[in-house]
Amino acid sequence: KDDKSRTLYERVGGDLNIETAVEIMFAKSLLDPRVRSFFEKNQRKMQQIRKKVYQFLSGFLGGPKLYDTTNVKPAHYHMNITDYHFDALMDLYAVALGELGIHADACKDFLAALGRVRKDITTGCTVRMELAKKNMEKGKDGLFKRLGGQEGIVVFIDRLYDLIAVDNRLKSKFAGKDIKKMK
Image (cartoon, rainbow, N blue to C red):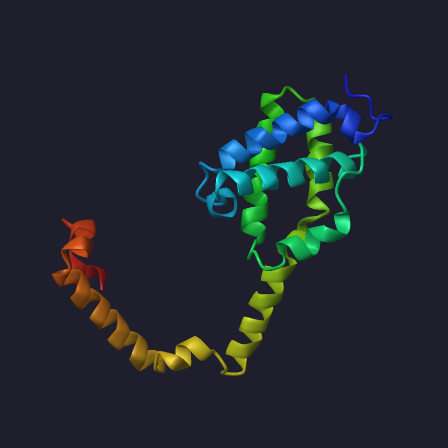
């Protein structure tokens, strides 16, 4: 039975279960193409990430405050984490908590609590996407202009397909495919 009078930290099983959930989520994230790039680092960096995530969750869920939560937003600002990536991590945490046998209500509350930091984690990417959108609306899309607009894109794609046709490294990736049809 899930005792909702206890902190969420206690309801999910305290330090041991939080640390284990982080380890499970991390291991699964390294296999998940949606989020692997955020976690696939050298061993030392991966250990630091796991430790910070555990420390954050511990305090955030009502346990010992081991992480300054004011660091969440600045730490993620330049990482280009979208809602898609955040949802993928939520999925991985749901699986991890399920594997640990955490009560369904505690899992639901854990994910709801984690959802409250979504904005802090995705803000940087959201801001950059909004700025890019506004620039496009004003006709200030720099890359599109640098490529020569629509005509430049056509030239680029033509050149790309020319390279695919002659470069053996690329040709092998398209073996058996009708390149002209793809173009």
